[in-house]
Length: 262
Image (cartoon, rainbow, N blue to C red; front, side):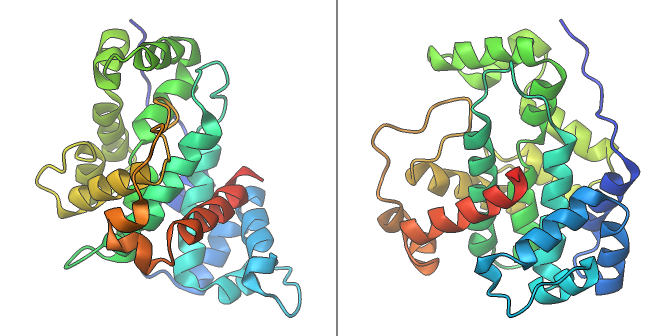
């Protein structure tokens, strides 16, 4: 049985994840961080200069990109890029990588809208994005072993059971462990730990509900295929209607996912 190690991150990406504890960073703080890593700068400029942002003129510095996008959106993008760059090399794991990222972004977008009470939207978005961090780590470190998990799941075996047989723990448990060792806030760790059952965390329940709505829209998780006949997501939950309908949600997810994949 392979041993799992907590992934080592570049300093800039560790600093990006430190933003989890700062829901309202300044433009200067974000720009200073982005300037330390070309992938962060490149993603900010690409999105800020995209047609979706309706630019009148092109921007060429991280600071100008952050001002155009807004602090909240820039913070989300920086954390997302750090996550996508932390776990490369999933080839060989049999995970449908585009569908996995589609799943993560969809859950993030939906969790943002589903947030309520003390759960802030920006916190819910990030929890949705990070909830499968344990799966990403397992597949990146041991792609051949994780390929066995994927094959078992496609034959109808419960994914958590298959992971426990191969790794001795599930991606949920490993994700929470990574979160603790990377210094994630307690509520974020609790949400990762509870994304299959909600647990005692309000944030965990929001992520769980977002996962259900994403599945209703026909979005799989990269391991199990999406449902053959998805529910009508727009009727399944008013959050889809609030976001402009199923097509608008899927278009928004694809725009964000494309920004990470580029």
